[in-house]
Image (cartoon, rainbow, N blue to C red; front, side):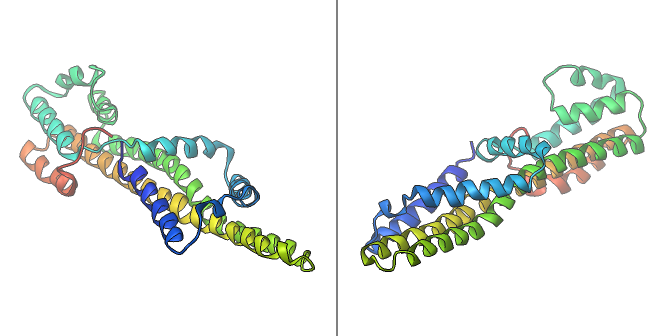
Length: 256
């Protein structure tokens, strides 16, 4: 589990609520069902308008990736590729079938190795795999864009909620006792919009973007490794090439 995700959300909420209390406010003042309906439900509806039906599944799947992300062991995967390169150099590409058919190998590495074992050229492997990478990247970006869109719309809908609240206040100017609470409700809508966007939606989209970038970088390393194996690149030279990818991530975790 990515501890930074729940920890960061908790710290953000504690910081906002704690600051409010220090200023003499009460957390109960933020509990406004009307503001929630207008801002959160309203902005969700607007986000769905901007989302393709086929992308909604990616948006839901991105929630799991945010809290339970995959792990990226650049160094470990590099060592496995070099081990397979040494095996192929000694016994030929067909010797890699054991790993490819074991059912326990890295799925993306197995996919690339299968192409090489089947006799595909380096160019064909690269072309096929890059198309696969591009499609996967677009699916991942669709989930990210959902949260980015929601984060962009929520503050504006919050302003809309504030305006609606002030309109209600203007209608009861002859009842002074209702003016203060009415204005409070109006401003709570703005707080909901700005807070939800900047504490939840936008940070989620930023982190998901980094996951997409890491995933693509790891896959690029695997692709270069398999192309090197298929082309007969010496393991020493291949190590030097793969270190470019693994350099900044050598201490990473195990799978993706």
